Image (cartoon, rainbow, N blue to C red; front, side, top):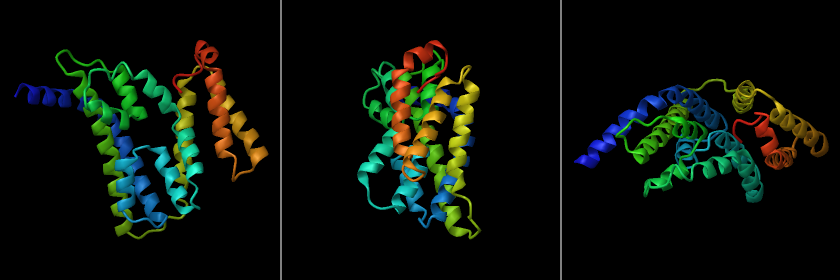
Length: 238
């Protein structure tokens, strides 16, 4: 009985922290579901992909990978580059996840930018179990994303409308992320490095082949320059 009370208390403590994420994930999830439908996939694809992949921007990229030629190596490297920041997230959460028992496996799987931010900075109220608090933050954010993708996937398959140009939602997503990071940083060295290397790779490798070389170059350069850039306050988090 006491354990059930602890779970309920942890859920009530975690939920308010995730409310701001609800609106954002619902909107993006719905856009993702409709986007998948516009590419010819039925509702089960965005539902299962949001449930099992849960990688936000990578799910948009995966939609196009499913339509292209079978190339697992390219998919592997592209996924690694897009989600490389999670390597740093994971390392920084090692101490946080200690003592969480079996919940640790789901916490690792469900780690996303928003859950990382909340679990890293939240002041967990006294008497609330840390493991269950982080578990519910992660679970709720996951549920919001799946719910949005489900609504978008079902809505997109039931209602016929002109979806021309909807694929731009992925570009818009990355633009918003870039602008948000730009506004968050006091100095813009890391952003300028990313832009410069992307343009250089675009010139060298052409528009169809520049993404993986660009992201590999950005990851390698920012990793090498991490300490000096952190001293300048240019990197909030990789």
